[in-house]
Length: 449
Image (cartoon, rainbow, N blue to C red; front, top):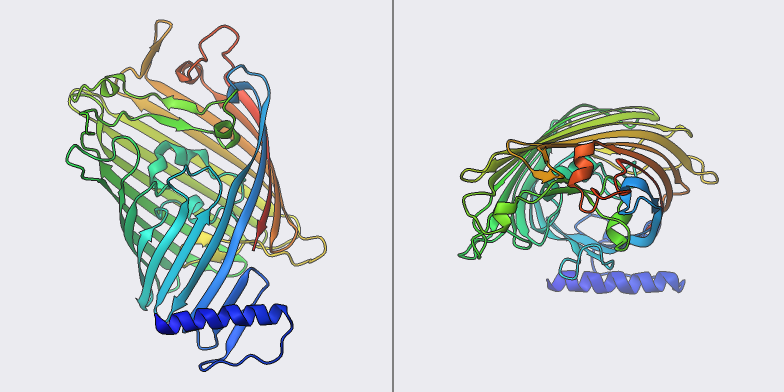
């Protein structure tokens, strides 16, 4: 690490000198290239060493009513969705990445969005270890900076563990082949939260696989097909209880989690009461999730869709639980730019404005459908036995890419749930508190550096 320490010191000194309009700066190795257009990046001309400092700030405002609130009246919340510092670079065939989030959204014990070391010497195969998000879903693979809607699809809430690293560590192998294939396989150990550690202290292991076939990849045209699979099994928690199988969703409005006075997440499937009570013959043990991805882009127009199916196997005498969801999204860039697509990671990236004065303007519509079914009664409310719940979300939005650093988003959401789903929501089955639909306006100002 002696050479890396020297390189980092040289890069920092060079950056300071550049800001002070100093004269000539020399090195004892390859020439250095400095880029300040997006953060600070310093690299050698032979690409053997690099250092980059960047980050993102996302300031949000959400206003919501009806089903989104406990009393059906309007509520709102302003908050920082993300405020991250991102440091990365490489030392020959070794890459590192550290992303630290200063907001409270991840909890006091989980501030690292990513902390990884990657070996690239087996190109095009990469081996990554550390803390990172699972590689599952096109929506999740696309950075939060460049997803079309302000929040990713609610169908991912049906199996939130497939898109959240929680507090665990893992190892992943990924790579591309032939200019049209991408794949990844990973093992991650989640060690935080309820029901994720058995009485012997052994953590739950989660396995992920993602395969993508992209027969068309160009600057203005993309055709993308993807298949995802994830699985894990739950042991007994220390007190003998089993995983309770609860499924909740914010339905595309993050502000309902930030507002503690008049909001709550939708309960699509409540916790299994017997599992909570410590009855080890109930609850759930095996958790399998399958997903499908599709995307097509032609110039400024793009369409993408995903499907997710989660099967929870009941433990002992308990029945099985099944969650399914799908979405469809249409987007069009009014100013003519195409979305950037990267086969390495099989994901969409930024829209770069062609006109530096007016920026790029994008409009979109997304439909999300969520459904949960249980072999047994999930809950009994007012004498009504409930074994199925459903929710639908319509999202209209506009994004303004003012430049390559600034993006402003405005979304309008309309949500509809069935009567049984409303009854599953805590506090909903009271007089005057039974709205089964809701509306929301969400906004974001983003700066990427």
